[in-house]
Image (cartoon, rainbow, N blue to C red; front, side):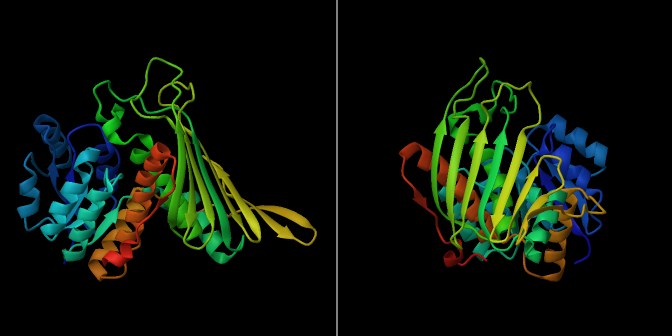
Amino acid sequence: MGRIGVAVIGAGGENIATGCHLPALKHVPEMELRLLHDVNEEGVRRTAQTYGVDWTTNFEDVLTRDDIDLVQICSPDPFHASQSVAALDAGKHVLCQKPLALSVEELESMSVAAVRSEGQFQGCQHRRYEAWARASHAAIQRGDIGEPVYGRFQVKGRFYPYPQDSFYRTAESGGQFVHNGMHYVDVLCYLMDTLPVEVFARSARHYPTADRLESDNYLSCMTKMENGAQAWIELNLMMVDPPLTPAEERVIIIGTQGTLRLGNEDNPNFEAFTPGGSVRTRVNPLIHVANPFVLQFREFAHTILTGRPNAIPFHFSARVMETCLAAVESAGTGEPVKLRDWLERGVQ
């Protein structure tokens, strides 16, 4: 295979496809954009003219073209699972935006398709490729704080001001923890090098203005991890901030020999335990701060071209996604939820 032929799904408006995926692809020499798809004919035609590529409103066209090797799925959430399954069944590689699915049943269908397909699958978990996450991961892997025993990811802000008719305002969407929680869970799992096995969550609803969603806007999720560690994810969208104000994010990883603390724009700070007390240090900033989408796309391209192991295997993404779904379930029932072992289902 030469360059990987790419089709991007959902490229007919201002969204993650046109704002992030397409600009990033211009900086991935291993990939070549060849086709755009969207049901919005006017929008996808306009985007295709900008990038000088073909376009279609028929998803079947994507699956039958021999020059399309990779399908990047950026369509609305309800279509992620079915389009991933169709693309995998057509022998295509798939890069799917979060959330991967809106139910465990959809995840199961994706699991079956991933097993039988010749194509590779990867969830678009780009936040682990951000500079602070990569620097923190490298430091933890060096043993700077010892073995992680506790992780916390807190988000405080307000929800994105979706249009009034948006699917993401509805209860059927699963709420904002299903839509965005995969990023928070994934970063903790990446840094701590482990996966959740059990979830217990509580949620609440407090909308201080007339603008509101049908779902709860606060969720606190405790997870027991495979290695015995604990993790806590808190999504608090009750804040009265102006629309589009960046959310405040704080991450803490406690290890057996030190603690990692970081926030939105901070360089990671470490407190290393010593006989004389704690010593605070900073992780050396990365010399080259690359676009996280570019980094993930290039790494996935190398997986496809060389056959080396997938950096984010399906079983990892499935457990992360199931954690988000289980958190909403647990918050509704008041009971903990045990998670599946996707490796037992034969998906690497």
